[in-house]
Structure formats: structure tokens, C-alpha cells
Length: 368
Image (cartoon, rainbow, N blue to C red):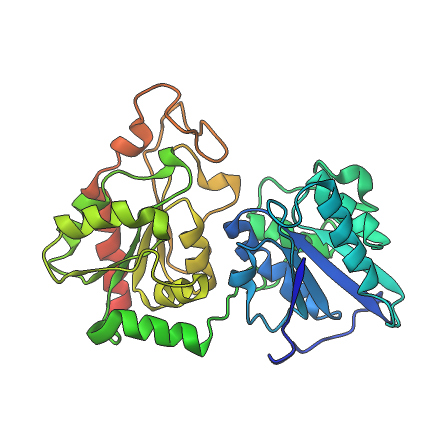
């Protein structure tokens, strides 16, 4: 486990709460997907108003939380590498326990944003006497307080509610659920260099990738062909999306598309998305980056649905889907192939329909 202090960034204004201990050591454990990490930031912000917050996350999740002024220390748990297995788990727990030596701490509280048995065991072995997590989580036997998982709420709110284990009726105030990311000056410079002459121009972002094959809408090239005569286009994603991006570039008129896949850090990608008029994305992590950067989002849903709780949170965002298919949803994440072999949920969502949504949102942005 490695630790990254964030003390160089301004601290959040902290307001004491009525039942807060005089000294509290707070840990948020989030070792799930990248999108979940982004959606954990409202919880982190809430807890930072009570005292210092440390976060235990993965090597993949740590970069997206860099520069966050509400985090005292980022602790990186390489659960599939250097910290793998029982020995690695115990080593990380021991380091957490040693971290409190010399501190005047009355309470150590861990918030299990990722509910595995392993995460719960690390919190318990790490000396966190209070452990808060979801009532249906795999690690719930290790929890001292269990919070009902509200299936009717966005996942950002579910996570935020972990901060209030004794008050199941609490409602988030305006703005409390907005994720927040903090690109650095270096990230901004990277985006300026990539955009070049487009740095101060309007553009539409396209995010065609997804870890889950059936969540990849197959018509991004056709959409780019339709949009390029009127809009500059930038393709965002990781190295694994390069092949899809090349097909989009080849389909669109020359000079109308920039391929940014695999060329930027996570926070620089967030900065890039933050500059777009609108982003078209599958149900994948770019929509959560867009939520954190307040970029209007068109999220394409196929095997999954918005009611799972992972929809876009940015203003003026919409969902594109094929309604009234009895087979939807067929999977919580997206199966490798369509269980029925037809993949109608994606194939029947036309480029013209998504183009119409882009034009509607882009016209609103131009008018501001």
C-alpha cells in the first residue's frame, strides 16, 4: 500500500456537527469500478465537514481522486498486484492501524463504499471500531452500523447516505450529490496541447468505449458522419478504445475529428469532457466524468437501464434507449453477448435519433 498526502491543497471548510466526537479518524474504502469512485466524491465531501478523511482505493481509482482538497491522504491498495492475497490484506490493515499511532483519536470510523468481505475485514483489522456499510453487502457481518440500500435512488445518493447511518430519512440538500473532480494545471495544459487551434472552439465529445461489449453502441461512426459537417468532434477514452476511435476518424470528413483515446490522464480526460458542449457516451465511466464536470450528457442504454442508479447527473442530460423491449434490462453490467442473439436494444437505436438529441442540447448551449 502506498500513501499520497493531499495537504498542499486547500482544506474544506469544516462545520462541527452536534454528535461528532472531539477527534475522529475517518476512512472511506472504495475499491470498485472507476465510475463508483467518482460517485463516492459527494460522500467524501460530506465527511470532510466533520474532520480529516483518508481514502483507500485501487491504483486505477487513485488518479481520479488526485488533487481532491477534501482528502487528507490517498491510500492505494493494489489488491490484484503487490497487495494480493491474505498476506497483502493483512499488511494493508497493519499499515492502517499503525497510521493512528501518536494521534489523539477518540473514534476511528470506516465507511465501506465498496461492500466486499475483504474491504470489511481490512477495516476491522485496521482498527476502525466503527464500520458503516450497506445492509445487503457481502461484508455486512463485519459492520457495526448498516444502512439500507435505496434501490430507488441514484448510487451517488446511496453512497452519500452512508454518512448518516442513524438517520435513514435524511434528504440531500441541493448540490450535495454532484460529483467533483479536480484537474490540475498540468492536466489543463495537456488538453490545450491536444486541442491546439480548437482550444477555444465548441466541440461535441464522443465516448464509444465500454468494458462491457454489449454496452457499446455500434453506430458512433455513422453518428460522427452526420455531426461532422456542423460540429467539431473529439473522441475520448482509453487505449483499449483506439481501434473504435480510428474507425470513427476514418468515417468522418478530414480535419473534423480529434482522437484523444489513450492520450490523456484520467483527470485530463475529465478536463477535456468539461470543455465539451455535450458528450455522447455509453453507460460507462465517461458519463460520470461528465457529471463531475457538469457537461450535458447523452447516455446510451442497451442491456442496462437508468433506474439501476448510475445515470448522468449533469444538468440538461438525457437518456437514449429503445423503450418497451421486454428483454430489458438483461444484466446489471452488460453481458458479453446478447442472451437472445438479436441485440435489439442497441441496433434499433438509430444514429438519427441520437443526432436529434445532440442538436437539441447543442443549440441550448450555443444560446447561453
